[in-house]
Amino acid sequence: MERILGLDVGDKTIGVALSDPLQLTAQGLTTIRRESKVKDFSVLESYIDEFQVKKIVVGLPKNMNGTIGLQGEKVIKFADMVKNKFKVDIIYIDERLTTVAAERLLIEGDVRREKRKKVIDKIAATYILQTYLDMEKEV
Picture 1 (cartoon, rainbow, N blue to C red):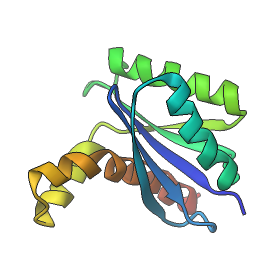
Picture 2 (spheres, one colour; picture 1 turned 180 degrees about the horizontal axis):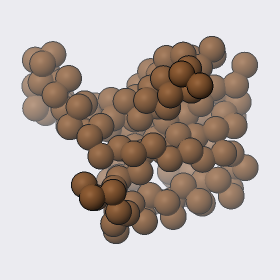
Picture 3 (cartoon, one colour; picture 1 turned 60 degrees about the horizontal axis):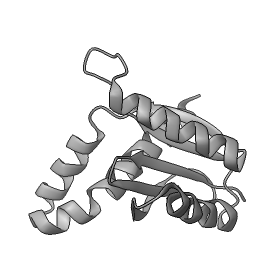
């Protein structure tokens, strides 16, 4: 059964989440420390192959007024490369408040600041993917 990946793409890291086989829930998978496109794509390819991924949900950072800024353009460029290289569908989800929500969740869970930094992108990717899965359930 194919699964869906969720990505929170940043300049330094990529948070990665994965749906369950029934595509109901999202689980945090890993955080990729970005060193090179070759390494980024190699790690993504291993997950795409292992979990038979045909669809990737990418968090699209927008400005608060809804426009796409420099960071959003970088994310679209990266996602386009992923789409072309791995022949997967890309779905964008507005991610404006996902990092804020992830941070709040970790603070409420009494997670120390150093630990939060290590998992925040993975949690944000989980929020992004879960948002998409919940929207699909409603259709």
